[in-house]
Length: 183
Ligand SMILES: CC(C)(COP(=O)(O)OP(=O)(O)OC[C@H]1O[C@@H](n2cnc3c(N)ncnc32)[C@H](O)[C@@H]1OP(=O)(O)O)[C@@H](O)C(=O)NCCC(=O)NCCS
Image (cartoon, rainbow, N blue to C red; front, side, top):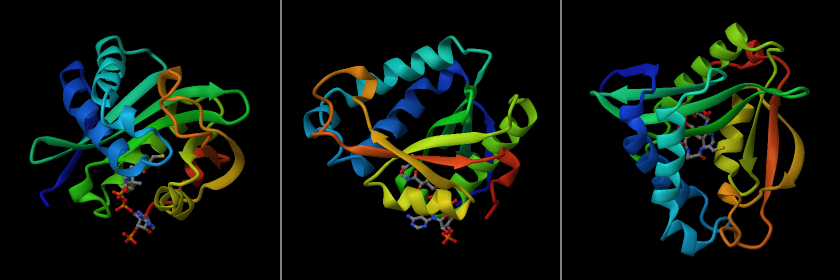
């Protein structure tokens, strides 16, 4: 693997980020998300989300892309001061499948935590992870997060029919972004 570079995402990244995101959902969210959604609308859904986010960036939102050899291979999206109690929100963190377990996710979440520690009002940090996604939970616990709450996952994009039954998600919390352990 070439060296990893982190940078702010731009509107030109929308297609690559959406493709990576959809591929990751297809691999890791199957079971919780309906096959009809994953095998059908998921790319268009993610492209609409990322074209909106990166085309009209909000001042309280930050998207960081990891490049290897000039190609996007991972991303993280942060909503600063999203919740009065739980703080800033990591909305998405995904690494391209072929490069998982190579340190890219750690680099991205470390940069996200630095952004929150520098710009968030409270410094607290949280995210939601599907209950079935035990691999990602191990990653977050390894970085110092604690599971604090279980809730219904909710339909992606709020569109009915995109879930299988009523899957759960777990809230992972860091009391302060500076508590995030680097690995
Ligand atoms: C979860 C994810 C972002 C982690 O990024 P990554 O680049 O693969 O992880 P890193 O290489 O930085 O991992 C660092 C450490 O975290 C832990 N870790 C990472 N993935 C793990 C797994 N599948 N199982 C157990 N521990 C894991 C390990 O301790 C690892 O160190 P090691 O490989 O030396 O043992 C990435 O694997 C991914 O995109 N997964 C699929 C999508 C996803 O589930 N995203 C999270 C949605 S909430």
